[in-house]
Structure formats: C-alpha cells, structure tokens
Length: 170
Image (cartoon, rainbow, N blue to C red; front, side, top):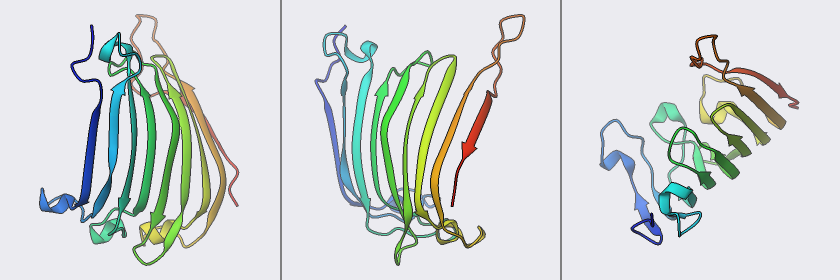
C-alpha cells in the first residue's frame, strides 16, 4: 500500500533540546532530515530511507549537559519492523568539547533478524574531551563487531547477542 507522504522533510534552525525538557542537553541544532519510502509503490511496507545532517553550534562535554557532537550525518535504510533488514551505509560524527574538535567517528553497518555487522573508524578521537572522566588519549583506527542472536532449543531467541569485536587503535 502506498505511503501517505511521498517524502517527509524536517528542518530545524538553532533548536535547543533543553528548551523542550529540563532533562535534555543544551544544543543549538541546525539541519535537515528527509524520510521517504525505498519503493514508493510499496510505501512504508517496502522500507524507509532516512538521510539527515545536523550541525550543533553548542557542542560540549556530557557532564556539562551538552552533546559532544558538532556535526552529524546519517544515512539509514530499512524496515520499521524488527524483522529488518536495517542498513547503515553512512554515519559520521565530528566530536567536539565546545572549544575544539575532539575527533571523527565514521561507521557503517547491517542488521537483520539473525545477525549484525558494524564497522567503525576513529580518527584522532580524544575521549577525555567528550567526558573528563575518560582517559586523556587520542585514538585512531578501525573497530569491527559482528554477531548473531543464539536460539535455544525451544526456539526462543537470546536477548543478548553472541558477538566478536576487534579493534586496531593507535
């Protein structure tokens, strides 16, 4: 069945999440998100594509009630239901402590009902800049994780997946 909308475009300018909730972090978000069906003839049942980019003009450490991300780009495709699949062809976050950039995180991945795979690349990431309780170091290199959800003899799927992860960080 066709999706009611051919596409949904959301735009924001200087939005502060803390103005909407006292528990939300301080932000100043400007950007856009577009949501549209992967196949217009199937509508949402055929899966959705989510493309977006945001710039946060007020990044900072979590402990100061800020979000330590200056820019965020996301390209996500998949079905809304748990059966998936869900593809993340592109994710990029430029981290910041509010004074200077604290590195870049790039990632891609694939999830479906039985398995998942995620690949990430850290570029000059300084963990202590986003949270002062973390060690002062700079991390660069790839991280990969993959796994599946074990199924018991009765057909019950485990809540926590069995997975393996590797990292080669400098």
